[in-house]
Each structure stands twice: as C-alpha cells, then as structure tokens.
Image (cartoon, rainbow, N blue to C red; front, side, top):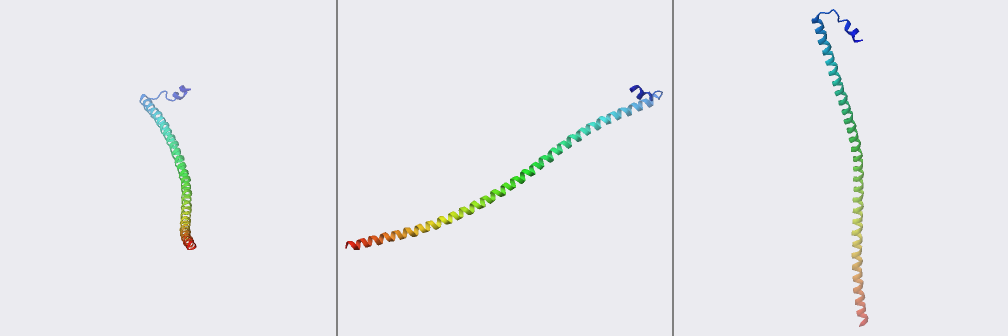
Length: 120
C-alpha cells in the first residue's frame, strides 16, 4: 500500500522530492511533538485534578475540625460555668460550716458555763 502512497511522487524533480521529504519529516516531527505535548497536557490535567481533590478534601477536613473545635469550645464554656457554680456552692457551704462551727463553739461554751453553774 505504501507504494501507492509514493506513486504520486514519480517523475518529480529531485529538488521537489527533497522538499517533499523535508516537509514529511517536519510533519512527523510535529506529530511527535504534538503527542508529547498532549501527554504533558494529560499529565498536568491529571495532576490538577489530583490537587483539586486534595484541596476539596482539605476543605472538608477543615470544616469538620472547625465544627469539632466549636463543639469543644462550647463544652469548655459549659464546664467552666459548672466549675464556677460548684465553686460558689462550695463557698456557701464553707460559710455555713463556719457559721455552724461558731454556733457549736458558742453552744459548747454555754454548756460549760451552765455545767459550772450547776456544780456551784
């Protein structure tokens, strides 16, 4: 079949044949260059898609971490409020204990005084 492709060149001047050969070589070279560039383009497009997916995954992970962080901050706030309430309750109870302790001491003194009066 290649002889049919070459048949049209029969009878052409050597100079024309040389020019045709140069043009065919140039076409082959350009085809190879185009294939290489297409391969590079395909490779770059694949890398771009991979990077886009990576960015999307990072965005999703970031959103998850932000929600988790917000939840933890709310939990910390709630724990801090609970701690403050417990601390306040403790102060109230300590105050009550001090009052009752004072009353107990006063009652003991009263009892001792009354016992001393009874002995007399």
